[in-house]
Image 1: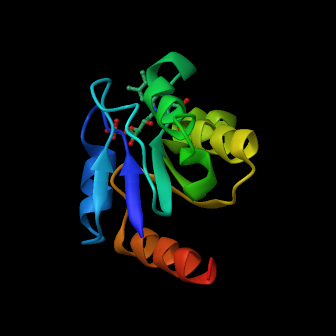
Image 2: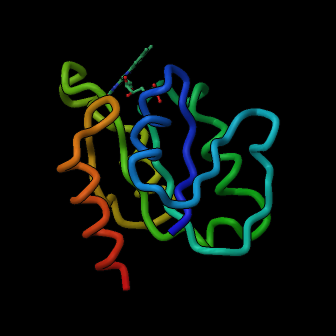
Length: 121
Ligand SMILES: Cc1cc2nc3c(=O)[nH]c(=O)nc-3n(C[C@H](O)[C@H](O)[C@H](O)COP(=O)(O)O)c2cc1C
């Protein structure tokens, strides 16, 4: 499964590298890339303007039809705002919220998300 993500301070990048799967890092320069294969989004949590590249990518061409789910990275100190970006994406595009983790995640987080992806069928 292709992992599409953004990362401002490198935590999400470190998380996705633990999978040894194909990845695509979104930046303002490639946010409007068209995709024709299934993917999941790994979203760090920031205010909406900061995560626009994720929404821009999903809303490009038919990209939303290939989105299979979303996982969120965040910081539990934000309490009820923990991983709200991933929850917003799940709601906006009607896809499952597969997992939430802190910072670069642990091996348990990697295994849980792999299990969730396997269950997508
Ligand atoms: C300005 C700022 C705002 C943040 N807001 C939230 C938040 O509302 N909820 C949350 O769970 N994490 C929040 N975080 C934590 C980041 O989402 C978390 O550190 C994440 O792992 C960063 O990923 P990145 O290094 O790939 O950018 C915030 C971090 C910063 C710097």
